[in-house]
Image (cartoon, rainbow, N blue to C red; front, side):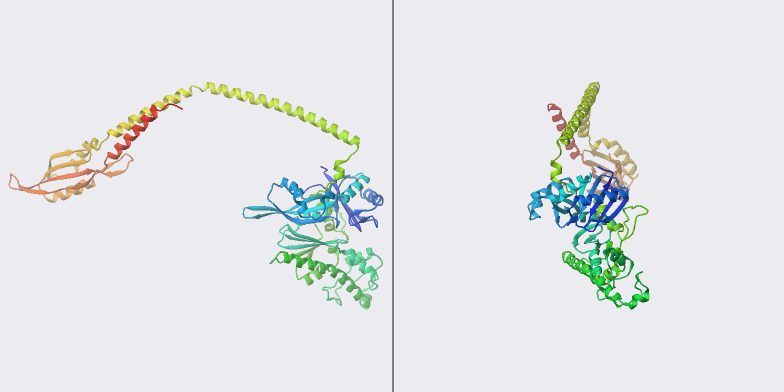
Length: 580
């Protein structure tokens, strides 16, 4: 891929050439030149006289000091068919194949005689669904070959062939990032309108009218007193010949810039001056009315969308007062755009009639061309070239084969060494198997013993602790004559000297606590009851109270016993099953 290229647009009236970085997002223009295209050498994008054009090219390139041989052509021709289509979600590198497979649906022509290309305009996301908006192009094979033949005449190497509209869009989508606006690029013979939203192209249309149509109207009009096209273009840029509206508002304003051909007083005295301004306003009005029809069509396709601003670029933005006329008639804020922010030009770049924005198409063609390819150029070539290419391919194939063999051999040795190291490490760690099996056996024995212990555990194991708590909590006026304990609870026979101490005893028994296995405090006894209390006379004549107390342990262990028994059974079954 070439670092620098000559990006070329051969227009009917003017040819523009820039030496520029190739396929860079923010390129630098090193040199730029524009010159009048020899009359009759090009028609609707087709080069009719290669010899005459080649002479003009050699002279202009030599004078500009441009020696680069790698070129990109930007072609403006009605012969190139375009369609904006929506394609389903596929990998981006598969879009080209999809375009080739479905192009016949969009172009009602014999595509065997056409070369296809595309430009990705926008990625559309609706929820989880994704699709692509694509500019699909079909250029006649003879048009593509026409430029390849001219390149051969000039000893150029074609890097790419681009479509005029695509080149313009590649630049504008980075220069204009506002909501819903239109860029009106008024060139010599055409006016291209790009509708955009936040840097994405919504629609593009071309009108076959430009500044040269206005200049021609001035030359043909007796009122303007203009003899040639160059003088007319200069007057458009120098003098404010455009009225503020199509009904000639401002025709008598003293603010009008006066031509250098006569004094201000002479200009005001000349009734022809008013007629000349009407001629210019009418000529530009034809362009404006065509633009208005395109805007109306855009609004019909995008219901509810309102344009927030309009930019005028190209040769048209040099016409004095043109933005005021467009703003008044379209009722949309309008401004001229004469400089490109994301493209750097030489310090002393000429800003005459052909300003920076007039080079938009050739600059964009070098950034991301659609890339029409000649079928004949791809399939033909001299015998020497074919042999040289075959030898080159064979040599590269041999080198690649040797490199791949060497790489495969080194990779094999590396992987073999890794395998040997892993086998050695596996052997050195084999003792771990016996350690693991021994550990598993001990864990199994421990589980069985622990389950057996849990199965034999009863609440009576804490009887000594219970007796000590009873000694601490029973009132001193009481004597325990009988105590019986089982897995469920206890029964006691007690003698008391006072009846009030019986109530205190009940409160003390209910407040007795112990710590469970989880470290939580829980009651020792529950469901405490005294079936009856009997009063009797004591030996000393006092009254004594005899009664029995029954209570249950707070935790009944039957469920725990069953759980432990189940665990023992499962462990026994696991030990008896054969190893996998």
